[in-house]
Amino acid sequence: MTAQTTAKPRIELIPHASPTSPEARAALMANPGFGKVFSDHMVTITWSVDRGWHDAQVRARAPFAIDPAAAVLHYAQEIFEGMKAYRTPDGLALFRPEENARRLNLSAERMAMPSIPEDLFIEAVETLVRTDAAWVPEGDGSLYLRPFMFASEAFLGVRPATEYIFCVIASPVGAYFKGGYKAVSVWVSDDYTRAAPGGTGAAKCGGNYAGSLIAQAEATRNGCDQVVFLDAAERRWIEELGGMNVFFVMDDKRIVTPPLGTILPGITRASIMKLAAEAGYTVEERLYGFDEWQADAKSGKLREAFACGTAAVIAGIGTVKFREGSFSIGNSGDGEVTSQLRAKLVGVQRGTVKDDHGWMRSI
Image (cartoon, rainbow, N blue to C red; front, side):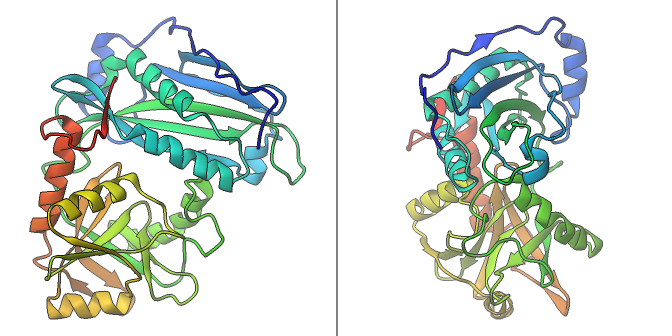
């Protein structure tokens, strides 16, 4: 989707008239949870078919006023990203933001939405972080950033919209696991699937997550932290968790992870694959069946399994439940390889481990 003008707009700063006081901000950040507390500002940029990207602003965070016929409300043209800003010994930094920009545009292409220039995406994120720098937590916390785009044109015809809003909001978050990392339990769903070839599984669109909620609720009812989805065709192959990619650590220094296609191309996933290969592990992207998972766990061939994503970074999988029973992996706790990879990745993000790949972008 293209527009007549592609000039990059300048982001105008409109300071918040009554920002949160330092005392109130400190109280909110003392125990922020995840995605419940938000910083003072947001970035908004508008796109239309005749003007391209325009009206770029960083301004007070406030509700949108959209028409009841806005296309996003009826046809779900919406995409988003998840990323973090960290407070490091050298200041503030982002982790691989150019990859988030690229992935957002891949999602946009799949959802028939306009692409946003990568440098404009990064500028929008950096501008918000600089403006709300006081909201970046110290210690194990971080500032979670949510860039997203939605169709704002008012119409009820089934076609791509001609008007969109791109927005970035920020939320200070604490450590994902209180009191240290812990292994999670997962439920393997055989009633629901997440994606199919040719579908939107590789796009980061809200509809994918809406469709996963009933399966996640099933996992919760069965005492599990997360749901695992199998493929839609054979109901055999492991794909991904409700919001995370998954890895399997074998006893011969091989690490297996499902291939891309119907799953989200996780940035944490790609980073782990790089770090694991450098640590001497053979990383295989291949189909891995639920039957194999059970057999390998029983025989001891499978030593560890872990999930990964922006929020939790890396979470070991200890127990697997399904309709016919359950099984444990390794010692049902945090495995050695899981801990090793997490320490390396978190160290890079926090600025305490050398960044050999130029993944961190100082703000």
